View 1 (cartoon, rainbow, N blue to C red):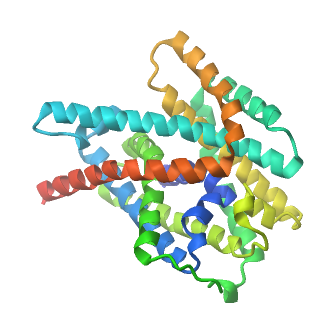
View 2: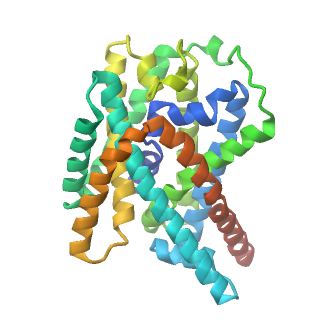
View 3: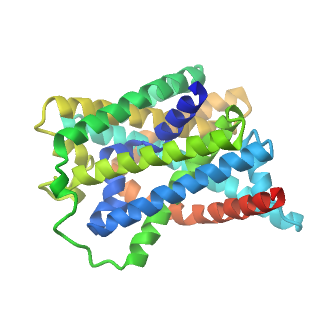
Length: 348
């Protein structure tokens, strides 16, 4: 049971980044569509659950222990040249997404302190870069253990804030979107697709702690349920906004700006979510560097580059880059479900 709780905490912590916790992601992909966005939110969460189960099942069944092995498995093709091209393409997509996610988290950190305290981006992004560089040079396992311990606390804080703010009679919105259902569903798929790019390497790393299909099902069901509840809570809190959400980088914090204790509690959620996701993304990118001297230099380089990139804006980076990588990540999802189907049929 201890392993199950730890795995679920790590998976939830991976998904709850700055975009999710700030409310910006949920607004861009779901809340903007009014009540129809709830349909998209449910579809996205269920597909994410299917991805979690398929990756854990394949990793367990095929004894996969690294992202390299996983890419070999899903890109397997009789035509070896095609297999190599597919594998390299997926590897490059994952690496580019990880480094862009890393930069987005630094931008999110700066956006938080600018919105909350009016601090300059140069100062806050610089401090974030230094903290991340120090973290990359030390034992990453300690940070991951802290993350898995903190995630349950973050979940409790989010649920507490929902109890204080969400009124059952206001669950459905008054405004309706004119967007067609197919467009809402497409956005839902793109959302879970880009989330899966960072989630899959984490799923592979924790798969060895789950020994059988029953345990994998338990982890999948509980993780999916928690994600659905948290997403629904963020969606409903966004409904309370009395301002143009497009004009604010951290909408949830703006909504709670006059609520005292709730605002401070949620600030903790946002800051921790930003830092842990930045560490996961940056470390995932740096893992491919074997030479120790290059590791230090590239660590310093990406931390320095995060400063000027932060000036592009947190919300702008999310609205442009995440849908783009969601579209690219669809190919990986198709390969995963195809390989899962083959493995399942072979067992039967």
